[in-house]
Image (cartoon, rainbow over all chains, first blue to last red; front, side):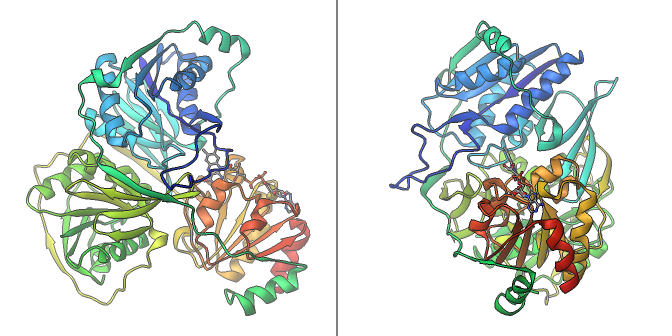
Length: 251
Length: 311
Ligand SMILES: Cc1cc2nc3c(=O)[nH]c(=O)nc-3n(C[C@H](O)[C@H](O)[C@H](O)COP(=O)(O)OP(=O)(O)OC[C@H]3O[C@@H](n4cnc5c(N)ncnc54)[C@H](O)[C@@H]3O)c2cc1C
């Protein structure tokens, strides 16, 4: 079986976000970038499946500027076999466009499994996997916390839903999006990082894919969130209870 | 302009997220219909009928639709839309809506706008990005707007109406081959996190699952829901669906009590809209205090029993 894993380069989750003065977006200059944490979980899941013999090839796909090569290399160092970069000029593409691009790659590569993070921690959209499954007309299993491949090649996926854990059975090919509890991504070892440098990354220009990429959502401005008014420290349980009861009136 | 609400329910009852979504819709236009898809859903329909603002409820009640399999719901919604025109299609931004709504948008070839927190006008909305560390004001250029709505940002609608219900049949619409194996439901007598008035949450500082008992007694006294940080869930102290934050549940109670939680930006993202935040942490430098109305520097193991006793 073949897996396609999609990875996005985003501002590292530890970085303090600063909104640009001109309100056009957030500051990205001299800011640490990393693979979206949910995509690390996606790569890890594919690598684990390869280690247990379920999958024999893992393709790491990213869509972005040249710098996204680094993100693909991270995936290759974790255990991916080869990479594909769909090169853009770095413009923000709506998730629907991203879905259409992945679809083109997927139709060429014919993976059995496509694994993506459930959301990117920059735009927090939580859409791409669902869009892709719809475009490919295949099953989707989102927010996965457990993936089990059955002997008949169907897959049981346990999903983190609001009311608990839901399990569905889907057939291949399918799209899986990862949630936090699926696994704990490994750190690439130094030898594997070195080895990853030899692995092949194919680069295609997004303009050569003959997809009409039109912008459907326009960002008018980006603002700081409203701040909470400063609070006070209390010294003991009695004053905490007193404040909650008489000042906040919430208990 | 006409809006369609996709109803979240479990056939027995309507999820509160739906009522908040109705309120959001009422800020766009006053022509609002709701579509319920399910099976043996009479009691959920009886509940929904009371919703204010609704013009009409359409009900697809069919065997095979008892569980919210996204493929099935999406097929039926698309067939329904063939004979019914809407300018806006709204779902709650719960795991139900997040799973389903992008499929509807994609079938219509429009770009969904996720998790809106305010409505500027019929095509301009605000939504949080970067774990709520920035707010984007975005305008949809699509003809049909497909939106998911953050329920905590809109009060639930009133329930004093008696809305007309029309049953619609889609006997020929495909039911997909995804099979529903089951739901391991977290059962609890406590209020639901996303609609609770008071929440008490524990973090890694709780050290283990057993120690969450220290919070239970307090939750009982306050009629509170219980939540947790990601660290507490990852460590297996409490179930997954207790996770509050950017990638868990977004909550907005009158009072949120954070115990042994440091206040990482991903956790804060889920609690920022709480009216009051109180926190207990032994580290006076803990970032949670910057977001708290009331902070208490103390060892939780000493303080919690005292708090329970004095409440
Ligand atoms: C992609 C991604 C998504 C994430 N999503 C979420 C999310 O949705 N929700 C979320 O919560 N996190 C999320 N996180 C994780 C987040 O970054 C933090 O790691 C997490 O919130 C920390 O949990 P904590 O505060 O319980 O643990 P810690 O940061 O370890 O804090 C424990 C706190 O307990 C205090 N403490 C310890 N012992 C005691 C005691 N005896 N008495 C009093 N205080 C004590 C300590 O002083 C400390 O402040 C996410 C991270 C990533 C990368």
